[in-house]
Amino acid sequence: MSSGPSDGTNPSAESPSPNFETVFGAIDIPALILDADGDVVVWNEPLEALLDVDRAAAEAVDEIGTMIYEDRELILAEKVCRHPETADEFYDVGVADSDYALLQADGHPTYEDTSTATGGSGADLWFLATPLYVDDEFVGAIEFVQQRADSERRRREMEELIDELREALAAFQAGDYTARAEYAVAESILEDEEVELLDQVNDLAQMREVLRTQVRETEQTKRQLERRNEQLERQNERLEQFASVVSHDLRSPLNVARGRVELARGDGEPEPPRGRLECDIADGGAHR
Image (cartoon, rainbow, N blue to C red; front, side, top):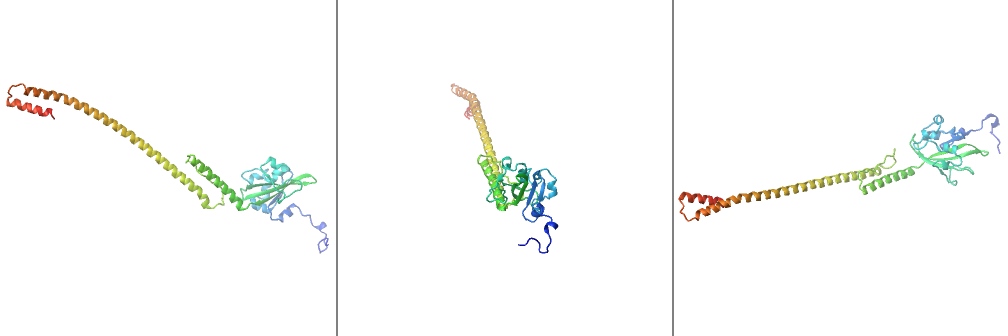
């Protein structure tokens, strides 16, 4: 078995031992290592390309997560550095299945988490991190970062879309047609036709609200017309009463005049032609 290079050189005397940077620079998996104090030891190029954050920028902040993610202040490795054996109890992270985890440390947990990076491509990410020990002394944490498949992101976005639809439809069913379904996921990977389904539902709600407004206005107009008709009927009744009273008042003096005419004709005295003519005129007027 060969003990060294074929040119006879002594590698231990002339070549430095490979360090973390050299090792992780040679692999194509985005990775980082923090020491026990949370300072950056390794920040390889694949990780820089994925997160759009270089090592100098990561070293310049106290909490790396604040410059990478929208929903957290610490990256997974920082959480492991603060609580190497109980990170899942202090933070909302899971413990990976040891049979399938890419990172494994005998007797120590491997944590996993997911998020979306704000820089770079805005990719959905999956993280694995585990504490590092040397002779039972905690010395840091290593973290691998992987981009989740688009299918997983699509599933999550579709669930959010369906939840929005359910909430909007429940509001409509309860009679609240002012409710609207909203979906504001940046750079969504859903098809336009799928997202437009919300617009169609909102349009139907808008049409229903307009129709309901029109029905209310029609009912209001109907009630106004009914009140107006009632007023006209009352006015007609008063006019009829007034006409009846006036007719009665007018008939009374005419009846008296007619009676007097009849008396004048029946008193037995001959009527001169002029007197008879006046009685005929008066009698005719009383009968009108």
